[in-house]
Length: 188
Ligand SMILES: Cc1cc2nc3c(=O)[nH]c(=O)nc-3n(C[C@H](O)[C@H](O)[C@H](O)COP(=O)(O)O)c2cc1C
Image (tube, protein in one colour):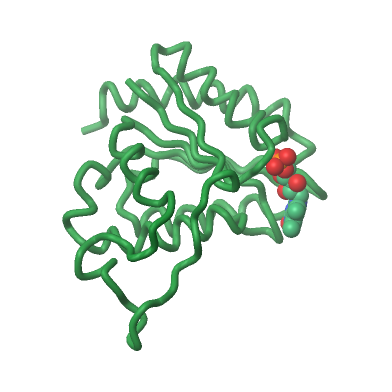
């Protein structure tokens, strides 16, 4: 079983990575293999809102005209059994890299062909407010909304603030174990 972690942080040693690592450690302990992707290190442009109505080949073909790392990452998501979205809280909301990625992902997922291998896939979100500590719950709401629009099976959203990193690391390690169990034995 493979768990793919997609991070909106560029720092593989920051607070967001530490929280994601805690979840992945739990998942590995339960038998999963894990992969990590840091979105700012990929080339993922923002949506061009192609035609006058604001749509493009996303809706008609389930693919995007922009040639960058989107399609490759979507394929990696199809090959994973579960996905973890880890996001550093910026202005109480999603980071720019995760927003740009999810903006385009939810568009191509309007088309049936793109949904294959992704629809209902179990996902967990983590939002880390590593500055003053505010905004993580609001960020979880934003993430939950867009992940639901994409058609994922949103299992949990975990808000974290700088002041409770140690506590949430324990929660996330347990969440990683739990995620593997949910994938192995989905609730009826
Ligand atoms: C543009 C920007 C906006 C930010 N807004 C918030 C915020 O609303 N609340 C907060 O606690 N931290 C805020 N931070 C701090 C980030 O949440 C913190 O840097 C991040 O969680 C840790 O980053 P890392 O995991 O990528 O190292 C902001 C940081 C940046 C760069």
